[in-house]
Length: 388
Length: 221
Image 1 (cartoon, each protein chain N blue to C red):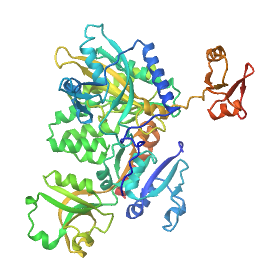
Image 2 (tube, one colour; image 1 turned 180 degrees about the vertical axis):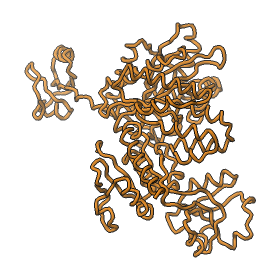
Image 3 (cartoon, rainbow over the protein chains, first blue to last red; image 1 turned 135 degrees about the vertical axis):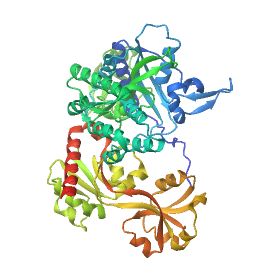
Image 4 (cartoon, rainbow over the protein chains, first blue to last red; image 1 turned 60 degrees about the horizontal axis):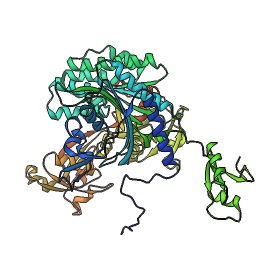
């Protein structure tokens, strides 16, 4: 079968957003950013494209296979199109804003491009809106500020399915596996089983590590029971520290926002490739994928200059699916020849005005054809038939 | 839709072996479920909060991955083939037991040295698993996707080897094939949609426990 070429066909994972969704998406993004701004997170705007070696250095090297590259004809250097905004914000904090007082609170919005979409989320280009809290200490109060701000901002949108936060400790399992000294093959098999929450396969794993992982896996779920179970666990070394951080963050969250639906999953690590501490995913009932995720990570060179940070990225296209449809706007048709001042007065009152550009035989019919709910006639706004 | 939970079940052998597990878990499907000629695809159960759908096993994974069903029962052969990140497989139900193997004609097997292979052509229902299995030992596998009756392929010259599920091995023997490599042990798993487990943690955890008790009960009895 030959494929017909049509100009309307877009590459996989890319789409046009039309009215009213495009407007609704922009409004959602602005509403979220207003929440972040109100708590002191100031906007920054990194460019779409950067040199490959700065975009994909250090912790963000994990994004390399999701990143589009292009050759810069001017400098003959390879450039990368951003596939995530957080590494760019981290770069700004570590360079141009390195002398700004800490903790530094920054927010951002921007489109990102990825080489592949996910199974459930085929989009390769989408809008990220987020904020980062940079130069923080180890205290869980920082994690709690980030998670509560994200939850409050999303609550403000009136999500239909209700919001729930899943709290994770992505370094916990890694340090348990490292400490157990498993060979690469066994460690990969165990990771695989953990990803699938396959209790049977984890129990089959050799040695002491299975004895630690099995109860961790059982302690996954609603915060109430999971936290009690986790508090009983005795873990070695770095894993114990990761668990203690998670428990402390959960405690603060439950005190500050007892109504927030909280689940705990100490096993989850996928999607947290550059995170170094307590992390989280945001879900809404009835939406297939996360609305956003975030957590702790390191900024700057490893060593003395490195700083701790925590942040959150929200996927606006997914939030759009969970948010209630905005009310249809009130549009009034101004027949051809309506004085300009009439239109200005109506716009001041909050109307959207659609001006007639040529004389019309039937202004009411023309108003209806152009999707107006009302008509400006004889100095008053008149509802069209079928509208209220 | 949002209130009840939906459990996706496959047809055939797993469905038959599952029925005692369901009843021990306190799930009695409506009578049409047992009728193999019924055209109904969606069924009620004795539990008003749980509905059933019956689909092909590969589709069970798809329905659960996309959250159209929150729970499912499916063999780990299907999970290995799809590797859906959105599916958790928390419980081995210990039914639908079989093995996934590489098989070839008996006369080929006698003179064959698998360590010399660089390329094989394989008929299978599981092209991803097959490709990964051979790639791990440096062999490129060219897969011919079939949906059933793999055992016919070597005899008819489609290819010389197959990757398929084997229970007793009777079908292989009847077609002059022998098992040359073992890929994985297969059993049916209870699977859960990831987002559902996060947003409806309490309900789903309770079902996982009920199924766990039903399975343990079977093993004890």
